[in-house]
Amino acid sequence: MAVQQYLHLSSGHKMPILGLGTWMAKEEETIVALNEALAMGYRHIDTAPVYLNEQAIGGVLKEWISSGKIKRSELFITTKLPTPGGNNHELVELSLRKSLQDLQLDYIDLYLIHAPFTVVLADDNGGDLKRNADGSVVIDGSTDHIGIWKEMEGLVAKGLAKSIGISNFNIKQIERLRKHCKIQPAVLQIEYHVYLQQPDLIEYCRSANIAITAYSPLGSKGVANLYKMAGVKRDLPDLFDIPAVKEIAKKYNKSAAQILLRWIVDKGISVIPKSTNSKRMHENKDIFDFKLNQQEIEQLNKLDANIRVVDFGYLKGINKHPEFPF
Ligand SMILES: NC(=O)c1ccc[n+]([C@@H]2O[C@H](COP(=O)([O-])OP(=O)(O)OC[C@H]3O[C@@H](n4cnc5c(N)ncnc54)[C@H](OP(=O)(O)O)[C@@H]3O)[C@@H](O)[C@H]2O)c1
Image (cartoon, rainbow, N blue to C red):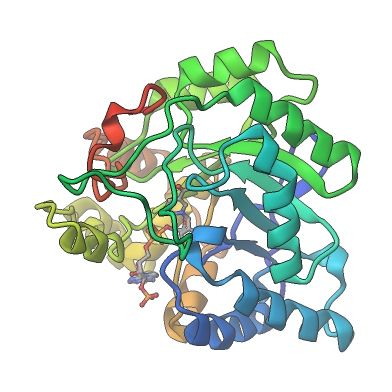
């Protein structure tokens, strides 16, 4: 059965509150997992060109739609304007058209600016980033959010995107953008979990009618590999091991992951846990048959510790970009 809860966006469209994340899901596993996810009722899928799985997702969607197993209108697909080779007003429409081609879709439900900063692709354009001699990424400091946003608005006018939004922007950046918008951002996608609650940002978005999507809601275990590959030492927190989370999980006979996800949707925030494992995909969507009480919600609220897992530290030198948000 499909997951039935939705957030109503300022664009007039509705987004299923629960979606499937696909970062670091390789092509082959994406194909198997997405088939299973759609059969389980997942209808909201989050991807991006840098995840290198849009083609795999497109193949599965095409099969489901053309065989009549699902209608396009039942799906909510998000993809993003790539940070390398995309964050430039001249590349916005080109980038979405490439994603749509790979996803085998005529339109995207939600197109997000993936990040407020821009990095440069290597000259051979094989997808690798251009690097300085010290291994730091080459940044493009000319990032112009207003110019990019005007092009994003154009995508809506052309029917290529139903809703447009942003990801990893801070309050200052959103405020500046909103002053120049004809179409307000419908969604902000950010890292959000018990250890990173960002109350000011959440409050700001609520007052501006911007829906929030929580990424890395389970603490993004997969990101550890990126830090390792980049030689960055990082101790990532284990959200599943928090005593309060374990205690509440035991009470409801649920897993720690289910408690972490339920706590987020209870706040009216959409959530996109990534899994390619059948059992865990089931688990992550099986969160609507119980409800945390106020005391439990407050217990988890108190865990906020401003611990950010995805601070892009695996892109050495990215914090020097004038639009680095954190
Ligand atoms: N906009 C952005 O900049 C941005 C950044 C990061 C992420 N995202 C999006 O948000 C999605 C989710 O974030 P994320 O992938 O970083 O992290 P996440 O969803 O917090 O965690 C995913 C990890 O947890 C494991 N997992 C999933 N369900 C589980 C469960 N029930 N029990 C135990 N382990 C479980 C997964 O492994 P298995 O696959 O083996 O189950 C995977 O290693 C991404 O996939 C992507 O779509 C966006």
